[in-house]
Image 1 (tube, rainbow, N blue to C red):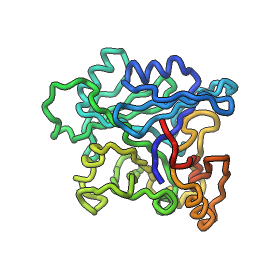
Image 2 (cartoon, rainbow, N blue to C red):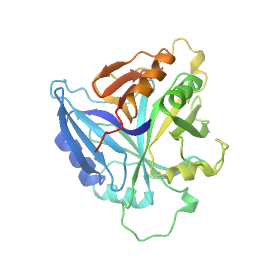
Image 3 (cartoon, rainbow, N blue to C red):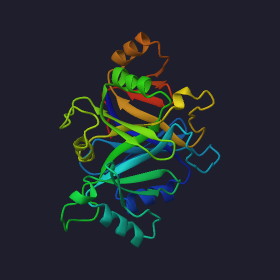
Length: 287
């Protein structure tokens, strides 16, 4: 199975597409109509991973507001020089946080798109390892991470590894607020420099890959709190995480693990334990 994209619901396609193309440098790879919704697939050059925006005219517009109890958080773009990105966006009067080195996690900055979806920029190296370069501002950005949340990381990681062929490469503990742990899963065929998922060197390595990873956030002790639950947003935010693969293989795995699914022609739809919708199409998908 191959992770290739994720889908966000939008309500203002003209303004939102302009932001992604004119400001962030995405290219419109594909556009199509399906079941009353228009899908826009956006990506950077020389990549097989993309962001899909879904516009459904029949839906009432409800502004997206990220909450700590949503099962989705943000997505990340890996860049060469985060200070140049920051300066460029400031010149275009885009609200963006000042870049900062967050412990041994990464050199980060944050903004939002026109629909208020959270976007995180991560430099491919830590601040102290920033390369000297005079190259173009947004040269070779990568769509790097989609960040979701789980109440049970053991079950969630097992789900992605067993059903969808991902592998856990990196773990980060964050002592902020009540505390949380971040788990990063990617293509199982990748080779991290260190087999230890806590190794610091694996973090910069991950940011330098031309691969899409899933980041899972787990609030410490939330699995023991019967009053705490994670929920998907009803008509905005994240709609699906998209894979390609062999439908017969995935059906066999789902039935073996007693996971319900719905099949529509060339795709299968099912959910994670935290209600993230997974959409898997036949291997012959194209962008």
